[in-house]
Length: 350
Ligand SMILES: [Cu+2]
Image (cartoon, rainbow, N blue to C red; front, top):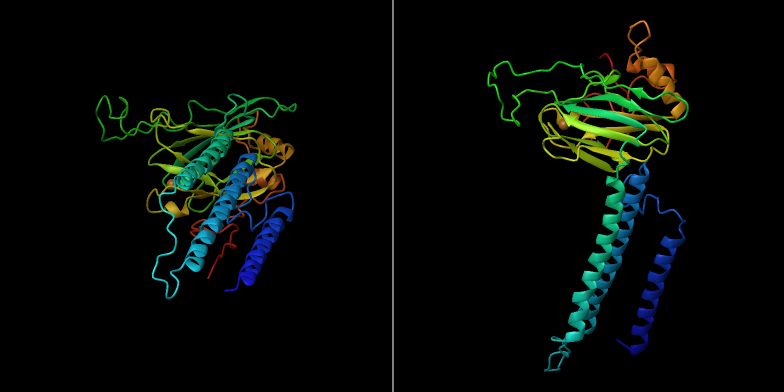
């Protein structure tokens, strides 16, 4: 190949690469677009946004490295072949100490940079401002559904502090066949579920009804996770976050709660169990319904037991009263399509 045309190819390749990078950088200040998310949802919490940006820049860095590696590979293959009629090998460049030091050092730098940003984002995601959450939700997972309860609500905007924990609530189920005085779980009997939390206002899923967890936007929320049987995992894809839900979480030393700084916009977001937990694992869906803090306060008022000791409204009734769909809109019972973001209308009859 003539020297001139080779240089022209190099120049054109360089130009194309520059234009490509410029197009990416100029496509807006926000990197939240379908191409740069590389398959991820955009997320509705500040934590999700940090993780998505880390993901985007990690993939971009990997692609840049990939282009360099592919370029060098093809450059070597194409331009450093054994020449026809030439009895010698091409010039050998093995044991080039400066070059080898360079390509040992550079990956360490790359790993250090990725590690740094990963730790920064992870610390932000795991950060819990103790006692500072505006809404604390008890999440109880069981085969094969969810129970959500409001432990405390402190919206800090004139609405009074609400303590919804119910220490006497719920049956303290103990396996009737278990007559050991001391059981295998830290001295507790098998089936001792006294570690589970119960609340005055609870939302319970069933085979006919997807549990809809109503939460306010723009408020710090803490999720406290516990399972009454096997290991499950609490996952809201739009939070870009999942965490295992364990039985006896405190004694299993798991970090069983996490916080999100806020849900940034109103809407319905599907939630799933993300830990294979048995036969109906795929049906273990729920929905997060984010509403404005004002409507959330209204919702809680409607669900509270009445002053004369009567029951408050059910979840569906209270949702309807604040102008929300009383049933889930992102998933339906027995929905097993994992890519589903919106529910197919439930077919009745036939
Ligand atoms: Cu599960």
